[in-house]
Image 1 (tube, rainbow, N blue to C red):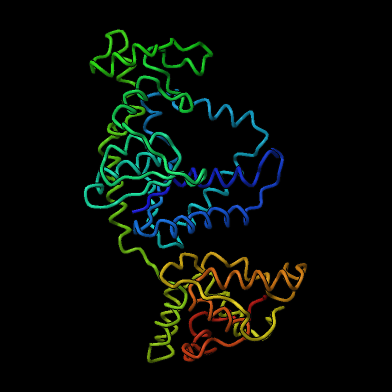
Image 2 (cartoon, rainbow, N blue to C red):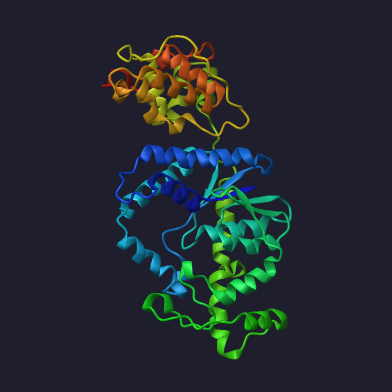
Length: 397
Protein backbone atom coordinates (compact mmCIF):
# COMPACT_ATOMS: atom_id res chain seq x y z
CA UNK A 1 0.00 0.00 0.00
CA UNK A 2 0.89 3.67 -0.37
CA UNK A 3 0.38 5.70 2.81
CA UNK A 4 0.34 9.48 2.51
CA UNK A 5 0.96 11.88 5.38
CA UNK A 6 -1.83 14.28 4.38
CA UNK A 7 -0.76 17.13 6.63
CA UNK A 8 2.68 17.29 5.03
CA UNK A 9 1.21 17.21 1.52
CA UNK A 10 -1.21 20.02 2.37
CA UNK A 11 1.28 22.26 4.17
CA UNK A 12 3.96 21.84 1.48
CA UNK A 13 1.47 22.86 -1.23
CA UNK A 14 0.29 25.74 0.94
CA UNK A 15 3.85 27.04 1.31
CA UNK A 16 4.39 26.67 -2.43
CA UNK A 17 1.41 28.95 -3.04
CA UNK A 18 2.33 31.49 -0.36
CA UNK A 19 6.07 31.67 -1.02
CA UNK A 20 7.59 34.62 0.85
CA UNK A 21 4.31 36.56 0.93
CA UNK A 22 2.76 36.51 4.39
CA UNK A 23 -0.19 38.73 3.51
CA UNK A 24 -1.25 36.90 0.35
CA UNK A 25 -4.93 36.07 -0.15
CA UNK A 26 -5.25 32.31 -0.51
CA UNK A 27 -6.78 30.89 -3.67
CA UNK A 28 -8.86 28.02 -2.27
CA UNK A 29 -9.47 26.47 -5.69
CA UNK A 30 -5.79 26.53 -6.61
CA UNK A 31 -4.72 25.08 -3.27
CA UNK A 32 -7.30 22.29 -3.59
CA UNK A 33 -6.07 21.55 -7.13
CA UNK A 34 -2.42 21.45 -5.99
CA UNK A 35 -3.17 19.06 -3.12
CA UNK A 36 -5.34 16.70 -5.18
CA UNK A 37 -2.89 16.77 -8.08
CA UNK A 38 0.01 15.95 -5.75
CA UNK A 39 -1.90 12.95 -4.39
CA UNK A 40 -2.85 11.77 -7.88
CA UNK A 41 0.69 12.11 -9.25
CA UNK A 42 2.22 10.15 -6.39
CA UNK A 43 -0.48 7.49 -6.64
CA UNK A 44 0.47 7.05 -10.29
CA UNK A 45 4.22 7.22 -9.61
CA UNK A 46 4.06 4.37 -7.07
CA UNK A 47 1.12 2.44 -8.51
CA UNK A 48 2.97 -0.88 -8.16
CA UNK A 49 2.46 -0.54 -4.39
CA UNK A 50 -1.31 -0.84 -4.80
CA UNK A 51 -4.02 0.95 -2.86
CA UNK A 52 -3.58 4.44 -1.46
CA UNK A 53 -4.37 5.22 2.18
CA UNK A 54 -4.44 8.79 3.49
CA UNK A 55 -3.36 9.35 7.11
CA UNK A 56 -4.74 12.44 8.87
CA UNK A 57 -4.00 14.30 12.09
CA UNK A 58 -6.77 14.71 14.61
CA UNK A 59 -7.17 18.15 16.21
CA UNK A 60 -6.18 16.73 19.63
CA UNK A 61 -3.22 14.47 20.45
CA UNK A 62 -2.84 11.78 23.12
CA UNK A 63 0.80 12.85 23.53
CA UNK A 64 -0.31 16.27 24.68
CA UNK A 65 -2.47 14.63 27.35
CA UNK A 66 0.62 13.04 28.91
CA UNK A 67 3.05 15.88 28.06
CA UNK A 68 1.43 19.35 28.02
CA UNK A 69 4.46 20.94 26.31
CA UNK A 70 4.10 18.74 23.23
CA UNK A 71 4.16 20.99 20.14
CA UNK A 72 3.31 23.96 22.39
CA UNK A 73 5.69 26.29 20.56
CA UNK A 74 3.86 25.76 17.25
CA UNK A 75 0.71 27.44 18.52
CA UNK A 76 2.77 30.41 19.75
CA UNK A 77 4.52 30.69 16.38
CA UNK A 78 1.18 30.68 14.54
CA UNK A 79 -0.15 33.42 16.81
CA UNK A 80 2.87 35.59 15.97
CA UNK A 81 2.56 34.88 12.24
CA UNK A 82 0.95 37.34 9.84
CA UNK A 83 -0.84 34.43 8.16
CA UNK A 84 -4.50 33.82 8.96
CA UNK A 85 -4.09 30.26 10.22
CA UNK A 86 -7.77 29.93 11.13
CA UNK A 87 -8.69 30.54 7.48
CA UNK A 88 -5.91 28.21 6.33
CA UNK A 89 -7.07 25.35 8.56
CA UNK A 90 -10.66 25.91 7.44
CA UNK A 91 -9.62 25.35 3.81
CA UNK A 92 -7.38 22.38 4.62
CA UNK A 93 -10.12 20.72 6.69
CA UNK A 94 -12.55 21.22 3.81
CA UNK A 95 -10.16 19.47 1.40
CA UNK A 96 -9.69 16.61 3.88
CA UNK A 97 -13.47 16.21 4.21
CA UNK A 98 -13.84 16.19 0.40
CA UNK A 99 -11.26 13.41 0.19
CA UNK A 100 -13.30 11.41 2.70
CA UNK A 101 -16.60 11.98 0.94
CA UNK A 102 -15.87 11.98 -2.78
CA UNK A 103 -12.71 9.97 -3.40
CA UNK A 104 -12.14 6.20 -3.43
CA UNK A 105 -9.15 6.36 -1.08
CA UNK A 106 -9.25 5.12 2.49
CA UNK A 107 -8.95 8.25 4.65
CA UNK A 108 -8.15 7.48 8.27
CA UNK A 109 -8.49 9.99 11.09
CA UNK A 110 -8.58 8.64 14.64
CA UNK A 111 -9.55 10.64 17.69
CA UNK A 112 -6.46 11.79 19.67
CA UNK A 113 -4.09 10.40 17.01
CA UNK A 114 -1.58 11.99 14.65
CA UNK A 115 -0.89 10.83 11.12
CA UNK A 116 2.32 9.29 12.54
CA UNK A 117 0.19 6.97 14.68
CA UNK A 118 -2.00 5.97 11.75
CA UNK A 119 0.99 5.24 9.51
CA UNK A 120 2.93 3.32 12.17
CA UNK A 121 -0.13 1.23 13.07
CA UNK A 122 -0.72 0.26 9.43
CA UNK A 123 2.96 -0.60 8.96
CA UNK A 124 2.96 -2.89 12.00
CA UNK A 125 -0.18 -4.66 10.79
CA UNK A 126 0.70 -5.10 7.11
CA UNK A 127 4.49 -5.03 6.66
CA UNK A 128 4.78 -8.83 6.73
CA UNK A 129 2.44 -9.33 3.79
CA UNK A 130 2.62 -6.11 1.75
CA UNK A 131 5.17 -3.74 0.30
CA UNK A 132 4.56 -0.35 1.90
CA UNK A 133 5.51 3.07 0.57
CA UNK A 134 5.37 5.92 3.11
CA UNK A 135 5.03 9.29 1.36
CA UNK A 136 6.46 11.81 3.81
CA UNK A 137 9.72 13.58 4.51
CA UNK A 138 9.16 13.32 8.28
CA UNK A 139 12.28 11.86 9.91
CA UNK A 140 10.11 10.18 12.56
CA UNK A 141 9.24 7.50 10.00
CA UNK A 142 12.87 6.40 9.63
CA UNK A 143 12.33 4.11 12.62
CA UNK A 144 9.65 2.21 10.67
CA UNK A 145 12.29 1.13 8.17
CA UNK A 146 13.33 -1.51 10.73
CA UNK A 147 10.35 -3.49 9.41
CA UNK A 148 10.74 -5.39 6.18
CA UNK A 149 8.98 -4.21 3.00
CA UNK A 150 8.93 -0.56 4.17
CA UNK A 151 10.21 2.27 1.96
CA UNK A 152 9.97 6.02 2.55
CA UNK A 153 9.91 8.76 -0.10
CA UNK A 154 9.91 12.54 0.39
CA UNK A 155 7.44 13.91 -2.21
CA UNK A 156 8.56 17.51 -1.60
CA UNK A 157 12.29 16.93 -2.18
CA UNK A 158 11.52 14.07 -4.61
CA UNK A 159 13.99 11.65 -3.07
CA UNK A 160 13.99 8.50 -0.98
CA UNK A 161 14.56 8.74 2.77
CA UNK A 162 16.98 6.03 3.88
CA UNK A 163 18.94 5.13 6.99
CA UNK A 164 21.55 2.41 7.34
CA UNK A 165 20.52 1.52 10.91
CA UNK A 166 16.91 2.39 11.85
CA UNK A 167 17.24 0.69 15.26
CA UNK A 168 20.19 2.88 16.17
CA UNK A 169 18.34 5.90 14.84
CA UNK A 170 15.40 5.49 17.23
CA UNK A 171 17.75 5.20 20.23
CA UNK A 172 19.57 8.39 19.19
CA UNK A 173 16.24 10.10 18.49
CA UNK A 174 14.97 9.18 21.94
CA UNK A 175 18.14 10.53 23.59
CA UNK A 176 18.21 13.79 21.64
CA UNK A 177 14.47 14.46 21.65
CA UNK A 178 12.76 16.52 18.97
CA UNK A 179 12.89 20.30 19.22
CA UNK A 180 10.30 20.76 16.45
CA UNK A 181 7.77 18.81 18.57
CA UNK A 182 8.80 20.46 21.85
CA UNK A 183 10.45 17.26 23.15
CA UNK A 184 13.74 17.99 24.99
CA UNK A 185 16.68 15.63 25.27
CA UNK A 186 16.65 13.10 28.09
CA UNK A 187 18.86 15.26 30.34
CA UNK A 188 16.62 18.34 30.25
CA UNK A 189 13.49 19.48 32.04
CA UNK A 190 10.07 19.09 30.40
CA UNK A 191 9.32 22.74 29.63
CA UNK A 192 12.72 24.02 28.58
CA UNK A 193 11.58 25.01 25.07
CA UNK A 194 8.61 26.93 26.44
CA UNK A 195 10.15 28.71 29.44
CA UNK A 196 13.31 29.65 27.57
CA UNK A 197 15.83 27.67 29.62
CA UNK A 198 18.71 25.94 27.85
CA UNK A 199 18.91 22.21 27.37
CA UNK A 200 21.52 20.30 29.34
CA UNK A 201 23.87 18.93 26.67
CA UNK A 202 24.17 15.17 26.15
CA UNK A 203 27.64 14.67 24.75
CA UNK A 204 28.48 12.37 21.87
CA UNK A 205 30.53 10.04 24.12
CA UNK A 206 27.50 9.51 26.38
CA UNK A 207 25.25 8.73 23.38
CA UNK A 208 27.79 6.17 22.16
CA UNK A 209 27.99 4.62 25.65
CA UNK A 210 24.19 4.20 25.78
CA UNK A 211 24.22 2.65 22.30
CA UNK A 212 26.93 0.17 23.30
CA UNK A 213 25.59 -0.83 26.71
CA UNK A 214 21.84 -0.35 26.26
CA UNK A 215 21.91 1.27 29.69
CA UNK A 216 20.75 4.79 30.55
CA UNK A 217 22.24 6.62 33.56
CA UNK A 218 19.85 6.66 36.49
CA UNK A 219 19.64 10.47 36.53
CA UNK A 220 18.33 10.45 32.94
CA UNK A 221 15.89 7.54 33.14
CA UNK A 222 12.90 9.79 33.72
CA UNK A 223 13.74 11.76 30.56
CA UNK A 224 14.37 8.52 28.67
CA UNK A 225 10.99 7.07 29.66
CA UNK A 226 9.27 10.36 28.77
CA UNK A 227 10.88 10.49 25.33
CA UNK A 228 10.18 6.87 24.54
CA UNK A 229 6.48 7.56 24.89
CA UNK A 230 6.70 10.71 22.78
CA UNK A 231 9.01 9.73 19.89
CA UNK A 232 9.17 5.93 19.70
CA UNK A 233 6.28 4.70 17.56
CA UNK A 234 6.34 1.33 19.32
CA UNK A 235 4.61 3.06 22.24
CA UNK A 236 1.39 4.04 20.49
CA UNK A 237 -1.57 3.20 22.77
CA UNK A 238 -3.31 -0.03 21.84
CA UNK A 239 -6.72 1.64 21.53
CA UNK A 240 -5.32 3.95 18.82
CA UNK A 241 -3.92 1.04 16.79
CA UNK A 242 -7.19 -0.87 17.19
CA UNK A 243 -9.24 2.08 15.90
CA UNK A 244 -6.91 2.50 12.89
CA UNK A 245 -7.57 -1.11 11.90
CA UNK A 246 -11.31 -0.72 12.44
CA UNK A 247 -11.45 2.34 10.16
CA UNK A 248 -9.30 0.61 7.55
CA UNK A 249 -11.61 -2.41 7.45
CA UNK A 250 -14.76 -0.27 7.51
CA UNK A 251 -13.58 1.48 4.33
CA UNK A 252 -12.64 -1.69 2.48
CA UNK A 253 -15.78 -1.45 0.35
CA UNK A 254 -15.65 2.29 -0.09
CA UNK A 255 -17.72 3.34 -3.09
CA UNK A 256 -15.53 3.85 -6.16
CA UNK A 257 -18.40 4.85 -8.42
CA UNK A 258 -17.62 7.28 -11.16
CA UNK A 259 -20.36 9.34 -12.74
CA UNK A 260 -20.73 7.06 -15.75
CA UNK A 261 -21.35 4.10 -13.45
CA UNK A 262 -24.34 5.88 -11.92
CA UNK A 263 -25.73 6.76 -15.35
CA UNK A 264 -25.04 3.25 -16.62
CA UNK A 265 -26.93 1.66 -13.74
CA UNK A 266 -29.85 4.05 -14.20
CA UNK A 267 -30.02 3.36 -17.93
CA UNK A 268 -30.20 -0.41 -17.32
CA UNK A 269 -33.45 -0.13 -15.34
CA UNK A 270 -36.72 -1.10 -17.03
CA UNK A 271 -39.03 1.70 -15.94
CA UNK A 272 -38.87 5.47 -15.59
CA UNK A 273 -39.53 5.12 -11.87
CA UNK A 274 -36.63 2.67 -11.42
CA UNK A 275 -34.23 4.87 -13.42
CA UNK A 276 -35.26 7.88 -11.37
CA UNK A 277 -34.69 5.90 -8.15
CA UNK A 278 -31.08 5.14 -9.12
CA UNK A 279 -30.38 8.82 -9.80
CA UNK A 280 -32.09 9.85 -6.59
CA UNK A 281 -30.15 7.30 -4.51
CA UNK A 282 -26.89 8.70 -5.91
CA UNK A 283 -27.87 12.35 -5.79
CA UNK A 284 -25.01 14.80 -5.58
CA UNK A 285 -24.57 18.44 -6.67
CA UNK A 286 -22.47 17.37 -9.69
CA UNK A 287 -25.27 15.07 -10.90
CA UNK A 288 -27.78 17.90 -10.54
CA UNK A 289 -25.43 20.17 -12.46
CA UNK A 290 -24.71 17.75 -15.31
CA UNK A 291 -28.40 16.98 -15.81
CA UNK A 292 -29.46 20.61 -15.61
CA UNK A 293 -26.73 21.81 -17.94
CA UNK A 294 -27.67 19.07 -20.44
CA UNK A 295 -31.48 19.33 -20.42
CA UNK A 296 -32.19 22.97 -19.49
CA UNK A 297 -32.45 24.87 -22.82
CA UNK A 298 -31.51 28.12 -21.06
CA UNK A 299 -27.99 26.83 -20.45
CA UNK A 300 -25.57 27.58 -23.27
CA UNK A 301 -21.82 26.94 -23.46
CA UNK A 302 -19.00 29.16 -24.68
CA UNK A 303 -17.29 26.19 -26.31
CA UNK A 304 -17.25 24.97 -29.92
CA UNK A 305 -19.53 22.07 -30.81
CA UNK A 306 -18.00 18.66 -31.42
CA UNK A 307 -15.07 16.81 -29.90
CA UNK A 308 -11.92 18.84 -29.14
CA UNK A 309 -8.43 17.37 -29.68
CA UNK A 310 -7.87 15.65 -26.34
CA UNK A 311 -6.23 12.42 -25.20
CA UNK A 312 -8.19 9.87 -23.14
CA UNK A 313 -6.94 9.40 -19.59
CA UNK A 314 -5.82 5.90 -18.56
CA UNK A 315 -9.07 4.34 -17.23
CA UNK A 316 -7.17 2.11 -14.80
CA UNK A 317 -5.38 5.00 -13.10
CA UNK A 318 -8.04 7.68 -13.55
CA UNK A 319 -7.99 8.99 -9.98
CA UNK A 320 -9.58 12.39 -10.64
CA UNK A 321 -13.36 12.44 -10.42
CA UNK A 322 -16.01 14.73 -11.83
CA UNK A 323 -17.41 14.95 -8.30
CA UNK A 324 -14.58 17.37 -7.45
CA UNK A 325 -15.12 19.71 -10.43
CA UNK A 326 -18.52 21.22 -9.80
CA UNK A 327 -17.21 24.79 -9.65
CA UNK A 328 -15.00 24.40 -12.69
CA UNK A 329 -17.94 23.48 -14.95
CA UNK A 330 -19.36 26.96 -14.46
CA UNK A 331 -16.38 28.42 -16.31
CA UNK A 332 -17.67 26.99 -19.59
CA UNK A 333 -21.24 28.30 -19.32
CA UNK A 334 -22.34 31.58 -20.88
CA UNK A 335 -23.31 34.21 -18.35
CA UNK A 336 -20.93 32.95 -15.67
CA UNK A 337 -17.58 34.01 -14.22
CA UNK A 338 -15.95 32.21 -17.14
CA UNK A 339 -17.05 35.01 -19.48
CA UNK A 340 -13.93 36.89 -18.39
CA UNK A 341 -11.65 34.17 -19.73
CA UNK A 342 -10.04 34.37 -23.14
CA UNK A 343 -11.56 31.79 -25.47
CA UNK A 344 -8.26 29.96 -25.94
CA UNK A 345 -7.77 29.68 -22.18
CA UNK A 346 -11.34 28.41 -21.72
CA UNK A 347 -10.86 25.69 -24.33
CA UNK A 348 -7.52 24.65 -22.84
CA UNK A 349 -9.12 24.31 -19.39
CA UNK A 350 -11.89 22.16 -20.85
CA UNK A 351 -9.39 19.86 -22.58
CA UNK A 352 -7.34 19.56 -19.38
CA UNK A 353 -10.49 18.56 -17.51
CA UNK A 354 -11.38 15.93 -20.13
CA UNK A 355 -7.87 14.48 -19.90
CA UNK A 356 -7.88 14.31 -16.10
CA UNK A 357 -11.03 12.22 -15.58
CA UNK A 358 -12.18 8.74 -16.57
CA UNK A 359 -12.69 8.64 -20.38
CA UNK A 360 -16.34 7.62 -19.99
CA UNK A 361 -16.96 10.55 -17.64
CA UNK A 362 -15.29 12.72 -20.31
CA UNK A 363 -17.89 11.50 -22.84
CA UNK A 364 -20.66 12.62 -20.49
CA UNK A 365 -19.08 16.09 -20.31
CA UNK A 366 -18.88 16.27 -24.09
CA UNK A 367 -22.55 15.27 -24.30
CA UNK A 368 -23.46 17.93 -21.75
CA UNK A 369 -21.61 20.57 -23.77
CA UNK A 370 -23.57 19.61 -26.89
CA UNK A 371 -26.84 19.29 -24.92
CA UNK A 372 -27.32 15.54 -25.34
CA UNK A 373 -26.13 12.65 -23.21
CA UNK A 374 -24.14 9.91 -25.01
CA UNK A 375 -26.27 7.33 -26.79
CA UNK A 376 -25.54 4.64 -24.18
CA UNK A 377 -27.59 6.67 -21.68
CA UNK A 378 -30.53 7.32 -24.05
CA UNK A 379 -33.07 6.13 -21.46
CA UNK A 380 -32.14 8.97 -19.09
CA UNK A 381 -34.70 11.42 -20.40
CA UNK A 382 -36.27 14.66 -19.24
CA UNK A 383 -39.17 12.65 -17.83
CA UNK A 384 -36.74 10.55 -15.75
CA UNK A 385 -35.11 13.70 -14.40
CA UNK A 386 -38.44 15.32 -13.56
CA UNK A 387 -39.42 12.15 -11.69
CA UNK A 388 -36.14 11.94 -9.77
CA UNK A 389 -35.69 15.66 -9.06
CA UNK A 390 -38.98 17.55 -9.51
CA UNK A 391 -38.41 21.21 -10.38
CA UNK A 392 -34.67 20.84 -11.05
CA UNK A 393 -34.91 21.92 -14.68
CA UNK A 394 -37.16 24.88 -13.85
CA UNK A 395 -34.85 26.28 -11.15
CA UNK A 396 -32.74 29.35 -11.80
CA UNK A 397 -29.38 28.81 -13.43
